[in-house]
Image 1 (cartoon, helix red, strand yellow):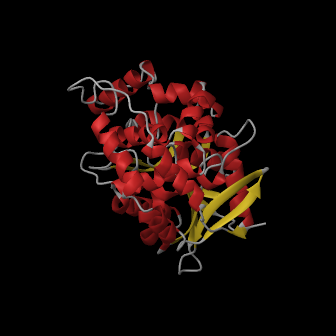
Image 2: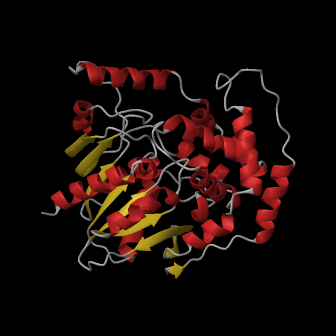
Length: 358
């Protein structure tokens, strides 16, 4: 059963957030440390104070409620999603999947341009935001993909495309694997490619592989904690709003193109969603549940490569695993493509899927 959903955070939760922020116990900081030891204290205090006294959740909540929100139960889990129908009744459907530390909010700026040509389904991954928390083991990328296939079936879409970045990329390619007769193609803006011995590559691709090797050899602390002990870090993320704030704000600082402009309000709305739904721990579990392996995907794949993403895909290696039909090298943008370069991403998604349907 699909039900309309409305965002309505209790005022007591907002008051509690403000109270906790006002009582933050701050650590000291070495003079002139900058980013050498982690997120700078002055910048974090600035963000926390704005979150407490200047940021307007109710205003953003009202804007979000202008979208058509729904929820349904799939495989024992509540699933929240936004469903925007195109004015063209014959339009193809697309399911857009976010990653961590994002949310369905990532796609707000691509809804208008993409809905000209596509019906859009934008769910929250189980364990994230209004689809959380999860309450049992096993919610990995493949299980999420099976839930998406069921969601699209319930909505009456027999053929559709999938798009995503970060975990949304893995979920989208997994969806192509679990529902190949329904998925027309998969477009991703993040596609890690592991080194393969004996493959001749260009200097550019070798440089990309060096970056991937460095990342594999020096696993980022946030990734290790979420993949190994998500419950442990979950205590801090659920009890301290400043912990949740810096956990995500640091990723936005490191993973975005310096030329991108993601406002503090955009970032804080996303962080507020994690805090107000208490899904810091359950969202972290996705990294523990999902195995670090590549799932086969038999449907056509389109790839957008962004210069300031965590890694950049290497096409000759990607083509060993996927049926690559479309490859675009963007000249700007980072990990949060739909927020950073919505114009470029929407155009690339449209080009890929409309080409497949000609």
